[in-house]
Amino acid sequence: MHSFHWQITITGMETPRLETRDLSLTRNGRLILKNAAITIAPAEVVCLMGPSGSGKSSLLRCLNRLTEPPPQSVFVDGQDITAMDVIALRRQVGMVFQAPALFPGTVAENIGYGPALDKRPLSPSSITTLLAMADLPADYAHRPITELSGGEAQRVALARTMANEPQILLLDEPTGALDPAARRHIWETIAKLRHELGLTVLWVTHHMDEARAVADRMYLLVNGRVVDEGEPEHLLRAGSTHITADFAAGELE
Image 1 (cartoon, rainbow, N blue to C red):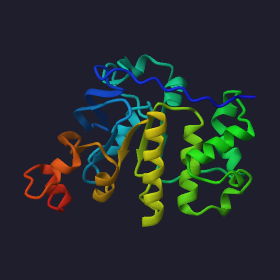
Image 2 (cartoon, one colour):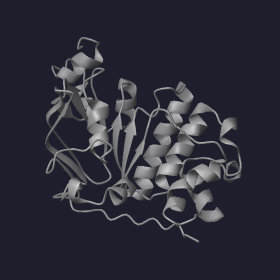
Image 3 (cartoon, helix red, strand yellow):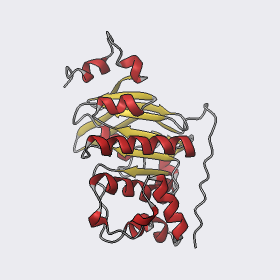
Image 4 (cartoon, rainbow, N blue to C red):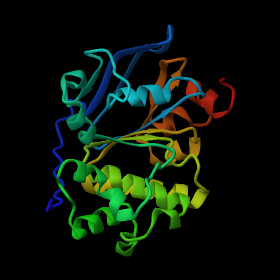
């Protein structure tokens, strides 16, 4: 039986945990991303914001090769991800979507899905550990997913991703369909995982209050280009002339 032992190695600040360099992406003859460059340090939480259609989800999908990026454009711990085994990459760089997309069965069956595919079945104690990481009680293990609330389902999806022991977590608007209390619960859960495990997080959101609450830094993506970057309190301070402040005020389309 697979024993769940988390191992996180924090690299020096001279090597970003995650980085894109001049990342460009074309789809159906249209340029989706244009020389996008972001850098995320180990254990940092960064929010990616921008108008609808700006390329946020496309950028996120490039980071674990759900969409194949050009060579020498995306790096994890300094290594070009296009030279990595894609399955190993997706274990290291986990992703949680807005819709949990759980399959029929129990919570434990969903959480153990990834390790089982890799012939590393999780023990009941490992399932309990993962439930605790997602701030869910141990007795949820045998609960059918049909009995979960939206917020609980999203936390099970998070636990399922964490079962692969990623060092980087990509979040594509995971609270977009949740009520305010469930959103805050996700915020607190991610903060705990960053603090306890040194998890590095890139979080796509359209909620400005969410970015203020969770992010160490923010990037603003407009028409596929990174047009602004900085700490939320700086970009969004009263009287700010940053383009992010215009976006927050609804003055950017």
